[in-house]
Length: 126
Length: 114
Image (tube, rainbow over all chains, first blue to last red; front, side, top):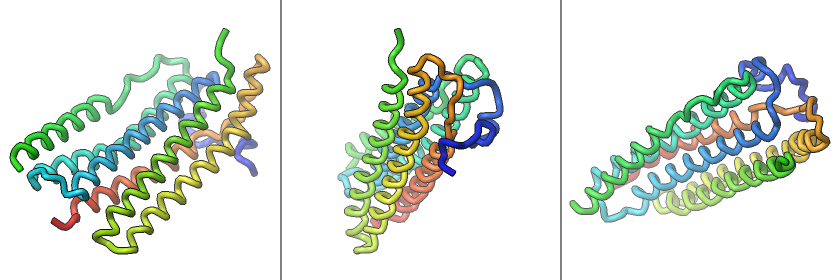
């Protein structure tokens, strides 16, 4: 059975599609793009964290590892945040509720800030 | 006057492609970096990432041509009451794959020889 034949009641996840009514397709597509933007952000965070360690940059090793771990943990949380955002936005749109407040912005900004400070201090101390 | 829904579907397809490209670039870079420590077996990372990207691309294209293409056409016909959206399966699969990738990256970073 091709996916476009999926009857409305059987779409995954049920706890998203069983509520409310169908929103404008354009809004669902925009929600999907927001998810993908988060996914790419996560990929970039992972790349940054791995590169920090793997390229043996001239940063004090302890601080470098700490910064790398912060970036990689953020990059690992990003897809979870992305999924949660997609789900809660889709549900809100189906119900006609106001959109939920963005999740994860504070975490992302704080984490990237902390990693930046760690690298900066590590560079000065190296 | 609103933008045609076809453009939204197009933008979404492009976003999927961009994400898949990022995944390929990331996995090639990871393979190259890890090869210095792990030897040739590191290229398995590249193979896995590229395979995942191809799977995402194919699934996203099926969505666009089959599903969103149709939904867009319906909307453009100014009705758009019946829509056959496959839902969040691909979204969930993408998130799960990236979560797994993140866990692998965490192991790599913590166990990196120094």
